[in-house]
Image 1: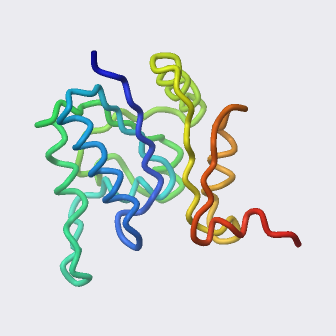
Image 2: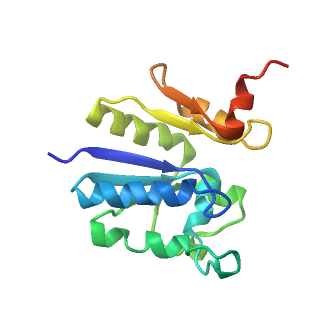
Length: 161
């Protein structure tokens, strides 16, 4: 029986391997007939931009990896109006069709995924909370049983002042 899995993509398409690794996980899970949904939050929105050119940095185009998702029956793609507006991006600039939701509805989407699977959520924090809002964004959607893995510069979150 396929599991319903919600993947939250918060990372920009280039600058680290997180965005690519997230898509690799999505494609692998979808190949095993899992019911996958993708939610793009924060800088993850940049993965959806049309006309990406990553040749100068010798990386594969992230949007081209996302364009194969329908072949794997991954059709539930979400982003928030607010994240687009915060980055001065319009829906016309996106290279994929996504369902735009309000930021306040993100909790509902996550709660639905939790109720279907009955699993814990693991939040990966790789960047310093002094450089990005990733940790605070995770804390805003976290539930008491959620787990946090602080790695790389994310470990600065537990440093004493």
